[in-house]
Length: 379
Ligand code: PHE
Image 1: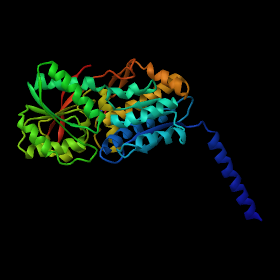
Image 2 (image 1 turned 180 degrees about the horizontal axis):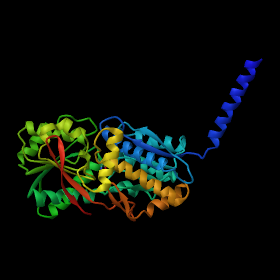
Image 3 (image 1 turned 180 degrees about the vertical axis):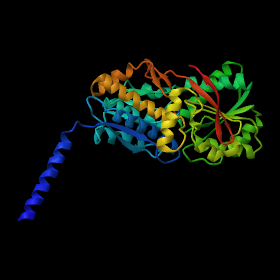
Image 4 (image 1 turned 120 degrees about the vertical axis):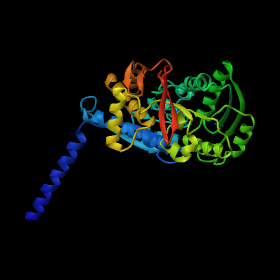
């Protein structure tokens, strides 16, 4: 009898706790879709580390909208087409995400954006640089620069710093990012006295692994540099195979090269190559150094460009929710559209009328399996 009584008391106490938890201010659910596995896994892993860091800071500072905590629900899109749309549908319909963070790769953001737009759920891409991403609708934002700028940065760098007049291009036909960046590079380079002496392509996403036929034909054209606007997995392999074919000229890339895996794959074949990106750990700006310290303490590694982009994306979204005073999609959208001069780790962020951020790029050089800061290029 006594024991039955005490188990009833235990049950009642448990029920009371469960009830108390359910009436506690509801969490604000942010959905994130990212390539945690597959050919661009470091993009997803490192950007979501950045998102996590921002979430922790917001929650430790008391949360938002009167003490509500942010909860991130993350879906792995496996770096594969078809997955991003499934991921955001689930995040919106089942998890009731009030906003979406993602993706890094432009093709995957382009796939998911129409779904967010239709649902009137704001989407913030940390790193997709293809211009068409935010053209998918007025709920689609990004916190990074776009490729017409990035293509100009590298074309100008080739002309002014490398004094290269003849350049070959090797692009990934499966990537909207790669095709766009190749085009923007070409436009600026040829309009300013340069010549494209060869233009070949491959299929990225871990499909093509042998680039020697393309490289052999590009070598014949005797370029002074080769522009490889693809992702790190292929860029590393291309560098190795280029050297094995006796190609000695520097390879140039864009932010798609930004990964700790780049030099793991390409090693010394990448020495003397250059790429543009969003962030350098060598930047002495206190905001950057503070982020590097916090990131290292939590993840025991140096951040690449994706990590601070993920962090800035989450922070701006948090600020927008606070400004909106609500989790309503349209109100958060309006607050995102009015972000001005937000001091991000990746630079000052002002969202322009096209929902893009106007920011500086950095150029890095690869040397001895490390990247060295070369230049900052203002917008
Ligand atoms: N800008 C690339 C794209 O649009 C992705 C990327 C962002 C890669 C930042 C590295 C760093 O596909």
